[in-house]
Length: 235
Image (cartoon, rainbow, N blue to C red):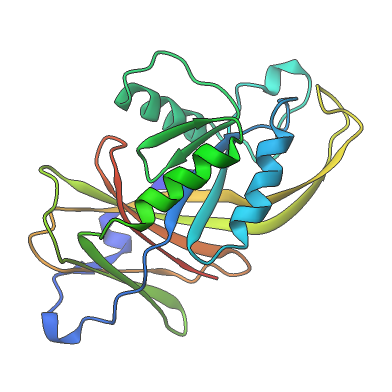
């Protein structure tokens, strides 16, 4: 479930440059919009297992809810994830959404699970330098997210999203188009919070709670579902 975190629940403040943590290498972010009610989604879901094993890729599966009417309610679906997909469609000048769909770094739209198109998009983004230095440091009870601009930033605000996801989940589907199948899902998003807006003019530090049994990812994205400028994860 997406929640806009209250500023009073965070410790956000400008951070002196001399105490910045070492930046981590930015993985290429691949978002999959999928559903357990969609008969054409399993090949894309299977592709996510391969992506999840790659250290150079951050694969995130957002389960949408608009297939639930067929007879099976996706146990991971959230209306907020449907809205995220629709926001991408608006940003790309499209009027409709579909599953499965992969979005690479908030920019490239890949229908289905086209491995060649996906590989090309990932390779292209790997060759680009990130304008944001991002590091994640785990403490006893929280994770410190540190950001600093290291290159030219886009105009306008950026948002900092914290995502908690489960690396592997198995579901027995008893109704709908996939009735009778038991499927494993990789990197299932189960919580998505926008924790800060950032202009990039000053370094920023945000502390968020440890993710417990889940894994944690952080995205820095141009507001309005624009390009993803930096990403990191803690597993």
